[in-house]
Image 1 (cartoon, rainbow, N blue to C red):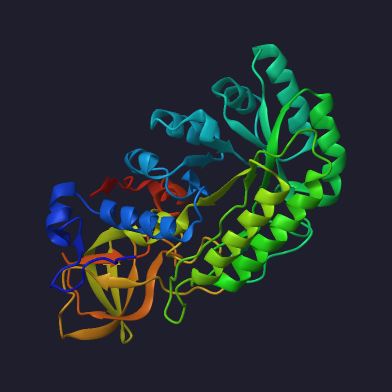
Image 2: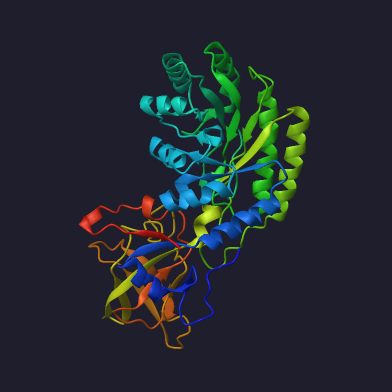
Length: 401
């Protein structure tokens, strides 16, 4: 995937230098997402996927409406995890036949909305089966279901484990045969399985192993299915590098495993449709968070750049969104890329908490009030995953360029 243009004096997004883009937005802080980089990443993924394997966008990674609308014709489907995301997908024009709805705590109203819309429900408990049967009967509309499997193995190397062991997600694999009988008894329209083992994985060989083991598990459970398995969502979890030393994901072993799994499942389950759901991998490297330096402070030998943005807009960059040991995101002084004057500085926000830290003692261009700090790798789990109401500061706009 191409990265942002850093060859000139300023970071370039959508063909615009950062300072001009800031003027166009009309304020700082803001998030900006580059259409060309998103399209390039999707095209790169298409080259890896075997023919016929669908690519779904997981809206939770970035639910900005304009971005979702841009993604819709570039992908084969959308995966949602709430009624709000369902509305976003439908408003963007996504085909309900290719929308999957997952999540461990779906409300009754959400289940009814999903049945009415005709989307595929990824069932995560016995409770949901009965509620879906009631909704289907009340609405006179079949409830399309795929059972989400909590596998009996755990993916090594994931940033967050979503399957294996005791988890709130999905149905334990050993419980599936009994629940598959309940699907038939409740008259639900069974279509297949969903399995998602973990996220933010940078090791291609580990993702490959997970794909192979997931396929084996699906084949084992398919023997108990009440109808032919027509659909298998194999999840995603492809990671992007955030910190120095992290290697970019090698897709060669993933492509090999996908081809092998597709052949194996196609032979055993004729006509089955395979899908991958990717979020962070499609949009994470195409976004940047931009804040303006308000003050430059020297405290006992340490430089602090105080900005108008911070953890309330970008919780993940502050280290408070899943990091066990805080590590810096890639950060640059976006309007001084070629400056020879360098220093070690910390970038902090305006909040009254020591947690409001965007960069901890990084080597940066020497910055003054008015300069623009750019946090890269910010296209996923940014604005929507941050406590924007904290301490009453203004909300952060987002633009697609």
